[in-house]
Image (cartoon, rainbow, N blue to C red):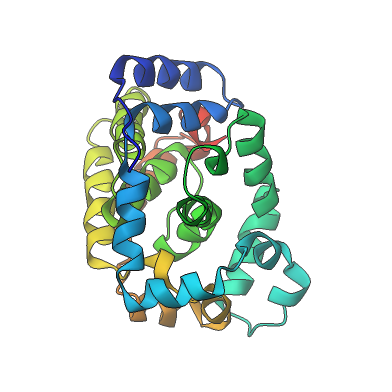
Length: 250
Protein backbone atom coordinates (compact mmCIF):
# COMPACT_ATOMS: atom_id res chain seq x y z
CA UNK A 1 0.00 0.00 0.00
CA UNK A 2 1.32 3.43 -0.91
CA UNK A 3 2.01 5.73 2.03
CA UNK A 4 1.03 9.35 1.43
CA UNK A 5 1.43 12.27 3.79
CA UNK A 6 -1.69 14.27 4.75
CA UNK A 7 -1.20 17.99 3.98
CA UNK A 8 -4.10 20.05 5.39
CA UNK A 9 -2.53 23.46 4.72
CA UNK A 10 -2.07 22.60 1.06
CA UNK A 11 -5.70 21.46 0.92
CA UNK A 12 -6.90 24.73 2.43
CA UNK A 13 -4.84 26.77 -0.05
CA UNK A 14 -6.38 24.89 -2.97
CA UNK A 15 -9.86 25.31 -1.51
CA UNK A 16 -9.39 29.09 -1.41
CA UNK A 17 -8.16 28.92 -5.01
CA UNK A 18 -11.29 26.99 -5.92
CA UNK A 19 -13.53 29.62 -4.37
CA UNK A 20 -11.66 32.39 -6.23
CA UNK A 21 -11.60 30.69 -9.63
CA UNK A 22 -14.96 29.22 -10.54
CA UNK A 23 -13.63 27.30 -13.53
CA UNK A 24 -10.51 25.68 -12.09
CA UNK A 25 -11.93 22.35 -11.00
CA UNK A 26 -8.43 20.86 -10.95
CA UNK A 27 -8.22 22.41 -7.47
CA UNK A 28 -10.60 19.64 -6.32
CA UNK A 29 -8.12 17.00 -7.43
CA UNK A 30 -5.33 18.81 -5.57
CA UNK A 31 -7.43 18.83 -2.40
CA UNK A 32 -8.14 15.12 -2.66
CA UNK A 33 -4.46 14.37 -3.30
CA UNK A 34 -3.45 16.45 -0.28
CA UNK A 35 -5.82 14.74 2.15
CA UNK A 36 -6.71 11.24 1.00
CA UNK A 37 -3.52 9.39 1.90
CA UNK A 38 -4.02 5.68 1.18
CA UNK A 39 -7.83 5.86 1.12
CA UNK A 40 -8.20 4.72 -2.50
CA UNK A 41 -6.27 1.51 -1.89
CA UNK A 42 -8.22 0.77 1.29
CA UNK A 43 -11.52 1.42 -0.47
CA UNK A 44 -10.52 -0.84 -3.36
CA UNK A 45 -9.76 -3.66 -0.93
CA UNK A 46 -13.22 -3.30 0.61
CA UNK A 47 -14.77 -3.28 -2.85
CA UNK A 48 -12.93 -6.33 -4.17
CA UNK A 49 -13.72 -8.33 -1.03
CA UNK A 50 -17.43 -8.38 -1.96
CA UNK A 51 -19.25 -10.57 -4.48
CA UNK A 52 -20.58 -7.50 -6.29
CA UNK A 53 -17.13 -5.97 -6.45
CA UNK A 54 -15.71 -9.19 -7.87
CA UNK A 55 -18.41 -9.20 -10.54
CA UNK A 56 -17.67 -5.60 -11.56
CA UNK A 57 -13.95 -6.30 -11.53
CA UNK A 58 -14.41 -9.34 -13.77
CA UNK A 59 -16.10 -7.06 -16.34
CA UNK A 60 -13.63 -4.18 -15.84
CA UNK A 61 -15.95 -2.03 -17.93
CA UNK A 62 -14.89 1.46 -19.00
CA UNK A 63 -17.99 3.46 -18.07
CA UNK A 64 -17.23 6.59 -20.09
CA UNK A 65 -18.36 5.28 -23.52
CA UNK A 66 -21.53 3.89 -21.94
CA UNK A 67 -22.38 7.10 -20.10
CA UNK A 68 -21.76 9.26 -23.17
CA UNK A 69 -23.77 7.08 -25.56
CA UNK A 70 -26.98 9.05 -25.18
CA UNK A 71 -28.48 7.52 -28.32
CA UNK A 72 -28.30 4.11 -26.68
CA UNK A 73 -29.39 5.40 -23.25
CA UNK A 74 -32.44 7.08 -24.82
CA UNK A 75 -33.62 3.60 -25.85
CA UNK A 76 -34.22 2.74 -22.20
CA UNK A 77 -37.78 3.22 -20.90
CA UNK A 78 -39.15 6.69 -20.21
CA UNK A 79 -38.58 7.48 -16.55
CA UNK A 80 -35.47 5.33 -16.41
CA UNK A 81 -32.20 6.27 -14.76
CA UNK A 82 -30.72 6.48 -18.26
CA UNK A 83 -33.31 8.98 -19.47
CA UNK A 84 -32.92 11.15 -16.37
CA UNK A 85 -29.15 10.97 -16.72
CA UNK A 86 -29.29 12.14 -20.35
CA UNK A 87 -31.67 14.97 -19.47
CA UNK A 88 -29.38 16.10 -16.67
CA UNK A 89 -26.14 15.91 -18.63
CA UNK A 90 -27.57 17.60 -21.72
CA UNK A 91 -29.19 20.39 -19.73
CA UNK A 92 -25.93 21.05 -17.92
CA UNK A 93 -23.75 20.71 -21.02
CA UNK A 94 -21.78 17.90 -19.40
CA UNK A 95 -20.25 14.65 -20.51
CA UNK A 96 -18.43 11.82 -18.77
CA UNK A 97 -15.50 12.39 -21.10
CA UNK A 98 -15.48 16.04 -20.04
CA UNK A 99 -14.74 15.04 -16.45
CA UNK A 100 -11.96 12.76 -17.69
CA UNK A 101 -10.57 15.68 -19.71
CA UNK A 102 -10.58 17.89 -16.62
CA UNK A 103 -8.72 15.20 -14.72
CA UNK A 104 -6.16 14.87 -17.49
CA UNK A 105 -5.76 18.66 -17.55
CA UNK A 106 -4.64 18.32 -13.94
CA UNK A 107 -1.62 16.51 -15.35
CA UNK A 108 -1.56 13.40 -13.15
CA UNK A 109 -2.80 9.87 -13.84
CA UNK A 110 -3.81 7.22 -11.33
CA UNK A 111 -1.99 4.68 -13.46
CA UNK A 112 1.28 6.47 -12.71
CA UNK A 113 0.89 6.12 -8.95
CA UNK A 114 -1.19 3.01 -8.31
CA UNK A 115 -1.45 -0.62 -9.27
CA UNK A 116 -3.50 -0.98 -12.50
CA UNK A 117 -6.42 -2.56 -10.64
CA UNK A 118 -6.58 0.24 -8.06
CA UNK A 119 -6.32 2.82 -10.85
CA UNK A 120 -9.24 1.19 -12.70
CA UNK A 121 -11.30 1.40 -9.50
CA UNK A 122 -10.36 5.02 -8.90
CA UNK A 123 -11.41 5.93 -12.44
CA UNK A 124 -14.72 4.14 -11.90
CA UNK A 125 -15.35 6.21 -8.77
CA UNK A 126 -14.66 9.37 -10.74
CA UNK A 127 -16.82 8.41 -13.71
CA UNK A 128 -20.02 7.78 -11.69
CA UNK A 129 -19.95 11.22 -10.04
CA UNK A 130 -22.70 12.75 -12.18
CA UNK A 131 -24.75 9.57 -11.92
CA UNK A 132 -24.59 10.05 -8.14
CA UNK A 133 -26.35 13.38 -8.62
CA UNK A 134 -29.23 11.65 -10.41
CA UNK A 135 -29.61 8.87 -7.88
CA UNK A 136 -29.20 10.97 -4.74
CA UNK A 137 -31.48 13.80 -5.89
CA UNK A 138 -28.97 16.63 -5.47
CA UNK A 139 -28.38 19.08 -8.30
CA UNK A 140 -25.16 20.87 -9.31
CA UNK A 141 -25.47 24.02 -7.24
CA UNK A 142 -22.77 24.45 -4.59
CA UNK A 143 -24.90 22.94 -1.82
CA UNK A 144 -25.88 20.06 -4.10
CA UNK A 145 -22.22 19.33 -4.82
CA UNK A 146 -21.38 19.43 -1.11
CA UNK A 147 -24.24 17.02 -0.42
CA UNK A 148 -23.17 14.62 -3.15
CA UNK A 149 -19.62 14.67 -1.80
CA UNK A 150 -20.83 13.92 1.73
CA UNK A 151 -23.07 11.15 0.36
CA UNK A 152 -20.05 9.77 -1.50
CA UNK A 153 -17.82 10.06 1.55
CA UNK A 154 -20.22 7.84 3.48
CA UNK A 155 -19.75 5.15 0.87
CA UNK A 156 -16.01 5.47 0.18
CA UNK A 157 -14.33 7.55 2.86
CA UNK A 158 -11.58 9.99 1.94
CA UNK A 159 -10.75 13.18 3.79
CA UNK A 160 -10.49 15.20 0.57
CA UNK A 161 -14.14 15.15 -0.44
CA UNK A 162 -15.18 15.32 3.22
CA UNK A 163 -13.12 18.48 3.65
CA UNK A 164 -14.80 20.13 0.66
CA UNK A 165 -18.25 19.02 1.83
CA UNK A 166 -17.64 20.64 5.23
CA UNK A 167 -16.01 23.83 3.95
CA UNK A 168 -18.57 24.74 1.29
CA UNK A 169 -21.42 25.30 3.80
CA UNK A 170 -19.34 28.02 5.48
CA UNK A 171 -19.37 29.89 2.17
CA UNK A 172 -23.05 29.19 1.49
CA UNK A 173 -24.08 30.49 4.92
CA UNK A 174 -22.70 33.90 3.93
CA UNK A 175 -25.40 34.20 1.25
CA UNK A 176 -28.23 31.94 2.41
CA UNK A 177 -31.28 33.31 4.28
CA UNK A 178 -31.10 33.27 8.06
CA UNK A 179 -32.33 29.94 9.38
CA UNK A 180 -31.77 28.01 6.17
CA UNK A 181 -30.81 24.44 7.18
CA UNK A 182 -27.57 24.38 5.21
CA UNK A 183 -25.64 22.26 7.71
CA UNK A 184 -28.58 19.92 8.23
CA UNK A 185 -28.74 19.38 4.47
CA UNK A 186 -25.11 18.28 4.33
CA UNK A 187 -25.47 16.05 7.40
CA UNK A 188 -28.62 14.50 5.96
CA UNK A 189 -26.71 13.66 2.76
CA UNK A 190 -24.07 11.81 4.77
CA UNK A 191 -26.79 9.86 6.57
CA UNK A 192 -28.43 8.97 3.26
CA UNK A 193 -25.12 7.75 1.86
CA UNK A 194 -24.68 5.49 4.88
CA UNK A 195 -28.16 4.02 4.50
CA UNK A 196 -27.92 3.44 0.74
CA UNK A 197 -26.49 0.47 -1.09
CA UNK A 198 -22.99 1.07 -2.43
CA UNK A 199 -23.45 2.67 -5.86
CA UNK A 200 -20.00 1.80 -7.22
CA UNK A 201 -20.79 -1.92 -6.89
CA UNK A 202 -23.87 -1.72 -9.10
CA UNK A 203 -24.17 -3.09 -12.62
CA UNK A 204 -24.36 0.32 -14.27
CA UNK A 205 -25.63 -1.05 -17.59
CA UNK A 206 -28.61 -2.70 -15.88
CA UNK A 207 -29.13 0.28 -13.58
CA UNK A 208 -29.58 2.64 -16.52
CA UNK A 209 -32.68 0.71 -17.64
CA UNK A 210 -34.34 0.79 -14.21
CA UNK A 211 -37.08 3.25 -13.41
CA UNK A 212 -35.40 6.00 -11.37
CA UNK A 213 -37.81 5.89 -8.44
CA UNK A 214 -37.71 2.11 -8.33
CA UNK A 215 -33.92 2.18 -8.44
CA UNK A 216 -33.82 4.61 -5.53
CA UNK A 217 -36.16 2.35 -3.58
CA UNK A 218 -34.07 -0.74 -4.32
CA UNK A 219 -30.86 1.05 -3.37
CA UNK A 220 -32.51 2.54 -0.26
CA UNK A 221 -31.74 6.12 -1.31
CA UNK A 222 -33.90 8.54 0.64
CA UNK A 223 -35.22 11.78 -0.84
CA UNK A 224 -33.41 14.94 0.34
CA UNK A 225 -35.62 17.11 2.54
CA UNK A 226 -33.27 19.65 4.14
CA UNK A 227 -31.61 20.43 0.81
CA UNK A 228 -34.99 21.12 -0.76
CA UNK A 229 -35.88 23.38 2.18
CA UNK A 230 -32.74 25.45 1.60
CA UNK A 231 -33.63 25.84 -2.07
CA UNK A 232 -37.17 26.88 -1.23
CA UNK A 233 -36.01 29.43 1.34
CA UNK A 234 -33.51 30.89 -1.11
CA UNK A 235 -36.14 31.20 -3.84
CA UNK A 236 -38.62 32.75 -1.40
CA UNK A 237 -35.98 35.39 -0.64
CA UNK A 238 -35.17 36.09 -4.29
CA UNK A 239 -31.88 34.19 -4.20
CA UNK A 240 -30.88 31.91 -7.07
CA UNK A 241 -29.49 28.71 -5.43
CA UNK A 242 -27.34 28.12 -8.50
CA UNK A 243 -25.65 31.51 -8.17
CA UNK A 244 -24.55 30.93 -4.58
CA UNK A 245 -20.87 29.97 -4.32
CA UNK A 246 -20.69 28.84 -7.92
CA UNK A 247 -17.04 27.78 -7.71
CA UNK A 248 -17.66 24.23 -6.57
CA UNK A 249 -20.67 23.78 -8.83
CA UNK A 250 -18.63 24.93 -11.81
